Image 1 (cartoon, helix red, strand yellow):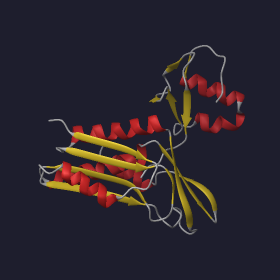
Image 2 (cartoon, one colour):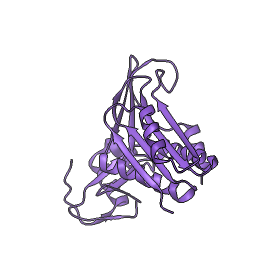
Image 3 (cartoon, chains in turn yellow, blue):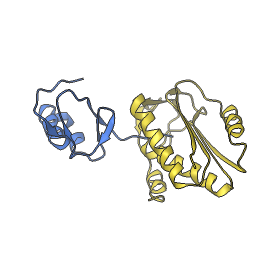
Image 4 (spheres, chains in turn purple, orange):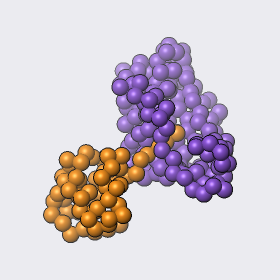
Length: 155
Length: 64
C-alpha cells in the first residue's frame, strides 16, 4: 500500500495546531494519529547562557532530499498510511515551533513508532546547520550523545 | 566557490588537495564527520568527481 508523504521546508513560522488538524483530515480513514512538535529552547544547549535566537541554515535541494529520504524509510518500515514532516529554516525566537511530524496508521503503535523514528533521524541526519546566538556569542550545535544513541536504536 | 583545475579524482584525493591548498582546513578535510556532497547528493569518499561537478563539504548536521 502506498503511503501519503508530505514534506515541507518552511521559511515562515509554522502553526502546529493547524497542521495537525489538516493532517487529521487527510488521515480520516485511520484509527490513529501521533504527532510531535519541537520548540526552540531558551537555554544554550551546553547549559547556562540564554539564547536570543536560533538560526537553522539549509541547502534547500539537499535538505529537502534528506527529509524525503527519511520519510521514505519510515514509510517502508512502519505500517503507516500517511506521514507529514514540516521543518523550519531561518531565524527563530525561543519557544517557536521548529519541527512538526505526524504519522497516521490503522492502529496506534505504528503511528507512535513512526513519529519517534522520524524525529531521531531528523535530529541526526537531516541536512541543517543550527546556530545559537546570545550574550555568550554564537555557537554551532551538533547532535548530542543522546541524539546519536536514540538514532542507533533503529539500526 | 572555488574552481579547481584538476584531473578527475576521488573525494578522498580532493580532501588532500584542498588541505594542501588551505592548511587551515586540514583538520576538517581529514574528519569523517565532514561529509562530501556532489551535485546535491551526499557521496562516500571513494566517489569520483569530474570536471563540471559542484562539490560541497558539509560540517556536522543537526536538525529538529
